[in-house]
Image (cartoon, one colour):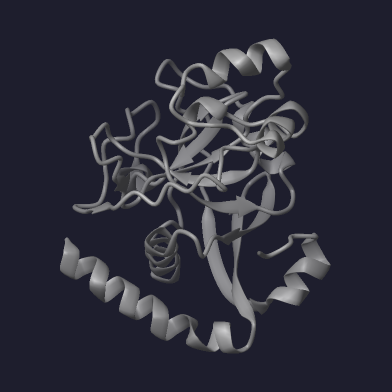
Length: 232
């Protein structure tokens, strides 16, 4: 696995040399039958960013389903078996034969609209190679947020983070346990539309919701101008 990630990082560095020198970054477009949304990935999580861009450029996610949705929480995708799954078939077990080392960063937390890597339980908190989720979350008041924060007692929440959860919303109990590596920067109503669909007992939508993800290099200034996203 170490060799895989060495090659992946080399690939990413080569492909982003022009992006960095031209002050560009990858702009991703996630299309669904409800509409499309755009996203950017964080340079603070280079392994996750490289892995996701490689999969998108390989068109891996095209035709896959959002196979797990929970309103007020998140929407999840990445099971390769979902592309040809029958109605009602249980999904979620299909995955890559590798994991991504955790890149958990305190400045990247589970606010509404972030993209994060799902994972099986493991002590290193290594991420799934394929599965990701987008946080819908909920808005918290002082009492309920304190209860959520108590679920991660070893993690200190900043004042800015607390304010974000009380205004924009999110899923704070996930902080410190899963790698956040991206952010949806427009049309969050698409996430809401997906999340509110009827689902079965395994949280799979009763009607399939397929996706198509593409990416291109765009000047950071243009991304900021079009979507209001501020790069660090």
